[in-house]
Amino acid sequence: MNPAVNKSEDTLNKYSFNIEGGNFNDAGTVSTRIKSILKQKGLPNDVVRKSAIVCYEAEINIVSYARKGTVNLTITAETVEIEVIDEGPGIPDIEQAMEQGYSTANQQIREMGFGAGMGLHNINSYSDKFDITSEVNKGTFLKMIINNPQSTKDL
Amino acid sequence: MKLREVKEILDADVIVGKDKLDIEVSTAFGADLMSDVLAFAKAGSLLLTGLTNAQVVQTAATRHIAAIILVRGKEPSTEAIDMAKELQIPILATKYILFETAGILYSKGIVGCLKKVGNDSFHK
Image 1 (cartoon, rainbow over the protein chains, first blue to last red):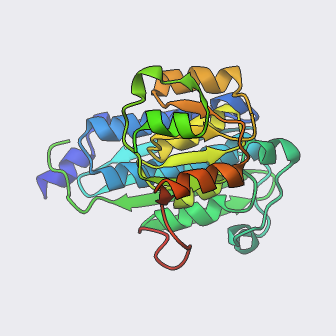
Image 2: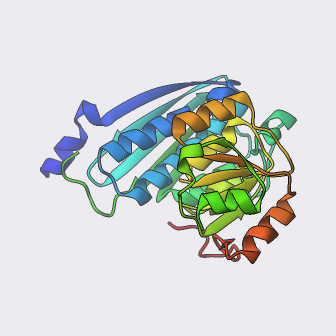
């Protein structure tokens, strides 16, 4: 087995963060944490930037719509994986939600500078691989993978 | 152009970052929609906005914005000021409206961080 893959199983390279729904003041703190972890690990700026952007948009979604959520970060030699799991209303029509400009945001979200139907679109654009599944009245699951072109061996 | 000169030509108050006026800037992005800032703004640019909450600072940090210019005489929220201090992002406040702020900066050589959006806007 490739030693780099073993390294990815190292628990030190897995992190988990909780996000409280409705807590608008804290929105973005997880992405700031993730950004500083990835920087500390010496990942390329572009990887750090893309990871921070997708995480931030996902965080805004949890704060805006869900009761609570969890962000799981897994750093491997080749990728940054960010899973975002929330308990909330779910998305009835994912295809529609992915459309640029489609939004169900309320005034409070819009006043923060979000809720213009760009979030999932941005996440999709900045992820190298993006999966989304959702169940109405249960929650939404996002998985974003950002490739590390420089393949960091020593994390 | 140094941030100090930006402050002077916009007749702006420095709310956060009085020690950071020697930062060099050459590009800017203007928006009140933070999702668009995340999508399009480039690292090292000025962010011209009328939004004053903490999310502006978070967004700026995520995008490595050099400094935030609040337009239309807006005052930042306490949360935004605290976060800007913590994340070390300068905030300047000008009474010029967004259009005038952009025009003044443009006439002094600051250009947009991109000209148009298009297929190359997203850097996959």
